[in-house]
Image (cartoon, rainbow, N blue to C red; front, side):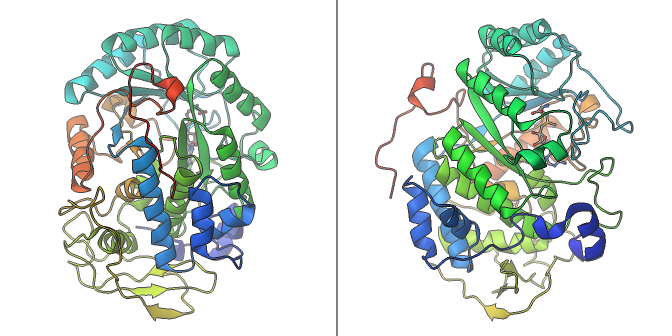
Length: 494
Ligand code: SAM
């Protein structure tokens, strides 16, 4: 797997301003303890930016794991133990927007465009239901003016007749369209604001504005949709301060779903990585995403939080990642399967914690999806120390039955262990799937065959000692509990 080491620092900086990539660089540390800041956030108390910054910047692996674990417990407490498996149908890759980061951007002439007919979309849903009783279908597309509002109405009505809830994710449309779709039965709408910094937004999304996008969210909420929103983490030009403001904004908005995915450079966009560099420091990016996912769980506790496909894509085959995941499982949840040899805990000068890769093939996860010879990105190390794997974690959590997990190399599993509770296998018919290339590696990220992909996702969830939720998976907020009465838990805050 390509890493940042293959890419000259100069090259990448030129394109993406690496130093400003949030989540990878460490932030300023304050005097108060990590636990204090974590507790402040988990209790829902008023927050200062430096509390958020402190929690985003753990200085030891124990701090980092305490964040993950606090998020895991908050997840179980606020949205339940079971994982929601939602089928996503990506029904059109036409887009009128020209976002600099996205492979669907209208200026990308290299992309073969497709548009599924309403019948094809409904058929995709009914076919998927033969493989799994999905409680929700997410219908996503580029911002495609090729569908009239009535065409989407037709699709929503037909899928609702099949039983599941419908989440739309079709971008910015007039209030009247949202209204028609809501009346037709659409339950939820996913529209990430991507960044709350209006200047960066304008640079990256030159064909719209942050105000216009936020107005859409306001409209959707006023119409009674369960709204989902979120950010791309690691966007070129995005700073840590911006991410902190994003999180503050999300807390204020209190959406019903929060999605945090890593930026994945697409070669046919202006934000492509230099030719020799697929993704700078994937392991660092994964950990930055996980911390942000965990923190968003604590800050917006009632939200559904997906383990994003983009996270799975950047994490494939990172040996460093495998070590971290196993170590977390053991330290916190008493996993006694094969573990890496005690790895060295590295704290480079810039504050990012790292694990050195383990050396033997068994320890590195060969046979579980890893390829012998793959090297992890170990970064520039300035300070080394050995961290003992202390078995300090609580047992009897959802992980007490953690069995031999064959998915160590998929960080979506780790996301499910630190706050996320939703996973969205792609159920788009294969002939179209390959062309929904928002970023490279996405199309085949879960494999070619729907049943095999579903089996993989289910095995991962089971391997984590978790169960799959039945039902639609509405927000646990009381006003959305008309159809499903989930128990409202009390006393979640520590
Ligand atoms: N048109 C709809 C909209 O605007 O919300 C949905 C489709 S859009 C392609 C879905 C999401 O893909 C975006 O919200 C964005 O976060 C994500 N995305 C696009 N390009 C990406 C990239 N290069 N890396 C990571 N995420 C990306």
